[in-house]
Length: 501
Image (cartoon, rainbow, N blue to C red; front, side, top):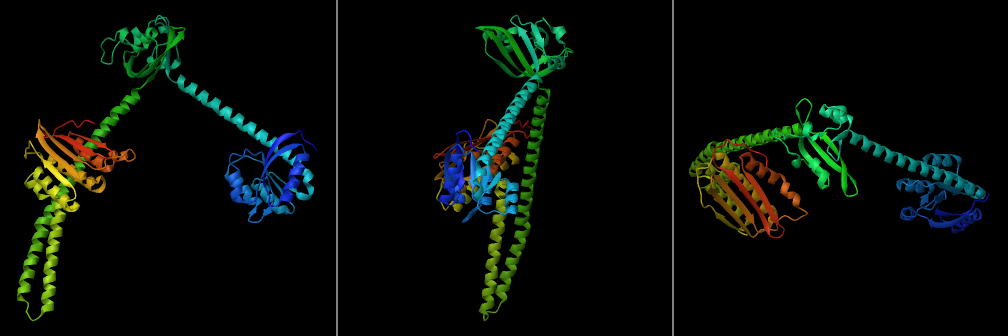
């Protein structure tokens, strides 16, 4: 059987050059102009599949270190719809059936190569049918997508006005939304009926209506927040797009597609209300946490501190009572006394970390100075820290002082971990009824790749502390030049709106 000369791109999985030559000879005699690449290993086949645009894969059944089953797996992994034909000198019926179930197209015995060309012709025809079927499905999906787009567009209200601004078309959705029928408004200037008032009920002149202005000025008018008025006199929040229909340089009509955004407006209001409640809850939780920290710190300092001090005094008394001729006992007692001192120091550090006593007793400025001293100790003096507090007022509300202290604490923690800075500037000012706080370093700043740090939990926590008290927080950074955090918090009454920033 011969076949009209046709280019055939063959990926041949075969370890024997003689057997490969026999297969190619059979294909040439069958009328194919063959382009062939022979591979013997899985790696070679994986390299050859991409970009080869192969028409068919012909594989020997068993190769050293490779097999038809493995080759079929490689083809499936490549997700390529290419006919796979096995040509073998020995293959059992069970193996052949199993491979057919796994996706092999057919198998041909090497002593019956005359079957090869008809098998290939059939498989190429089947592949063509499958390809055309896929193309038809793709075209059908594209048409379905287009139909879906048109259907979605028809879900909006559509008004068509002539060049005299009179209604010439109104779709059913527009009738449903506005309460008017097309017959009632046909030939009328609809602007005077549905768009003559602003959202507050004041008159809207035609010159301020973008949907009409584009009839003379051209271009497309898009409005995300406007209002149309229904037949019953109720306002309907809308977004709309007005597009002119042009003939030459003249707009002969306009199409206005609009949507009712009442639900969106309600959702926005609900979101604002929810955000306000969430912020109030966050502020409350921070207040509760600070109160709990204060309570624990005071209990550590007052109760546990007193107990440890009493233990130290008793230990000192016992040491004085011990006989001098027992040095080992005296040494153990002295070690115990030192351990009590270390425990007292650890307790005081823990209490100070939870809530510095001086924040309540001496005020924010003193607490920040203590914090800077701790910072200098942790960094070994490697970072120069400059602090200023002019003008200053120590009579800050406790919640303002606490928020500012925690923000400075977080800033210094971030500088220690990430900034690699040489100098840090802290500025505190009380003026015009607000506390102004600035923390600036000359470190590596925030690179473009690490810009997400602007929204890290630490920054979010600082921002929420400021916003929770009616204040603002801004973060600016230049890669290689440092980072600056600026905070402004009102120092007056705690009764504020706490609007979103």
